[in-house]
Image (cartoon, rainbow, N blue to C red; front, side, top):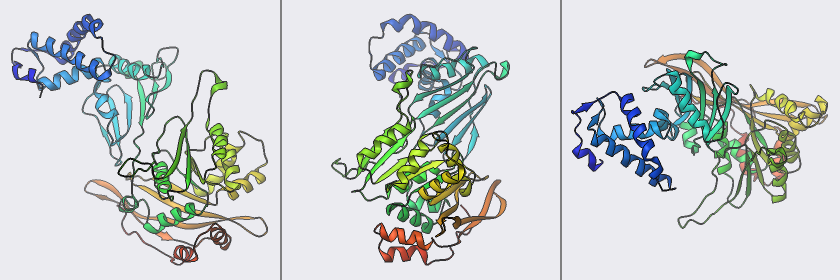
Length: 454
């Protein structure tokens, strides 16, 4: 507790928080020029000391708030981002969705979507706070630019709709996406019902022995978290090169107890400039990655021209793992074709042959209605002797029923091993160095059940 709180008389001059906020803002404004430190922590300490002095000198208080709580709330409102501040830097928050100034929902990493207890005071208050957030990335929200995208840091992305796009009385609507990379273990995925151990072992072994794959699904379906785990299973002496768009989510570097790096990883992110000739996009990073002699290349998301380069890399001996947005394993290849055409206008039959050769394994992830994340299907695209393609389902999640448990919807189902990989893929794995006993371990079992999903 702040020592000043010991002398705080809470009963002498109670006021509404907004009144004290306005008065304190005027007071701090007159003193702000005296703040000489460029250090953010020192500046925060100085500002808080001025706020404390003003509160103490005037014996101010707010019903229901202690001295320390009042100081913290005033600081957050004046310098930071109001009540949003406490959610922006939490590890268990994925999204802040502001539907209107009175309706704010928080999406947590466990799948819960809950309203905030705090609200903005008015539409104008909501707009002011969002403008402060956008200001950090040099973006301005006004009548001429009612739709703005920005960022607070390299891990917080913001999209805001202002007046002119939404009703004036709603103030503002915003989606704040918070990147909180989770390092989950194999046991975590199994316990959460995301997949079975056999499925995870299968994917890990295939990637280990050079089989390129794509994780597909909607936003927040768990693709990146799963891909991060798969990459963490790669032997430490293998070289991994990751490419991400704007925000770095992967952290694959391993160190020993002395802080020495024990694996072989290069992390890269795109960089954009007002001068388009200075842009460094995913395609440019991917082209450069090939000069680093990587054993594994991770393209965090295929969403443009880099898709063609990614499939080229996968077909020339590099193990490539990536993600994209599609509604099924089969639809993934058509999505890839559409993206590849952004670079070259190649006929569909040729492109289909290229992308299916490049990525024989596809896994489809989905966030279900009960907010659980599942690998719904894993498929292999087999290239037949006559050049035809045939997609086989290897694993599948079967939904059996929905029921309400303790007032919450729960989806019940099981995982099934539908089939084994083709003889041609088995041959390729053996050629890539997979021991025969390891191959036998992934092709012998025929079915595995999870029971009730968790």
